Length: 242
Image (cartoon, rainbow, N blue to C red; front, side):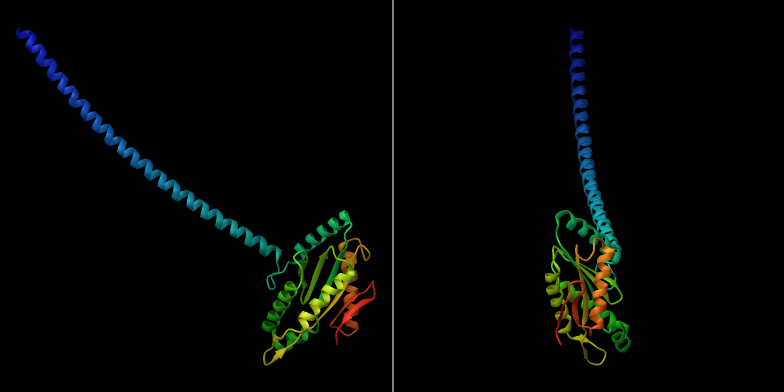
């Protein structure tokens, strides 16, 4: 009858409308999902860029801190250890040698007549000469050795697991390396020499102060004897090439 037909038509219309609404809703959901996925991709990109910037900044800070640490530990002219850092390593080597019953050889090294060279050639060439001396010393020691600029034209060297006899041989190699090197003067080539005094642990002292004092006395003896030589005060041994 008519009522049933009307009801059927209404149901069909409702079904069509619901299908249409459902289709539109699905399309909206799909569109929102696309937007969400795009936002997630954008967020991932931003996070990756942020992580990269943080990593780069952390690396820069790490390099800066390492540089500051290096500056705090080294002499600005020669790039060798400064006295404070050297003393820390020196004390550590003494304790280690005492624990394992190993010898240490200590050398005080001084550039002969350096004030005269500085006055004649000028401070810029004097600084260059000191850097050259430092590089030559560093190139002729072992990896285990500890070298510092002690002050002015003076250097100090700690040779772990080394007795005085071996220390004399090492220091003679250093002396010869400096003596045979041509340095740049203001008008002509120049030559420098070094005097070295050495002491040994444990026979010459039980602490840093005593060992440096003994090496200093040997250095004074080397200079008094004519310079350009290696002297061990306690053992009355020396090297000299005329």
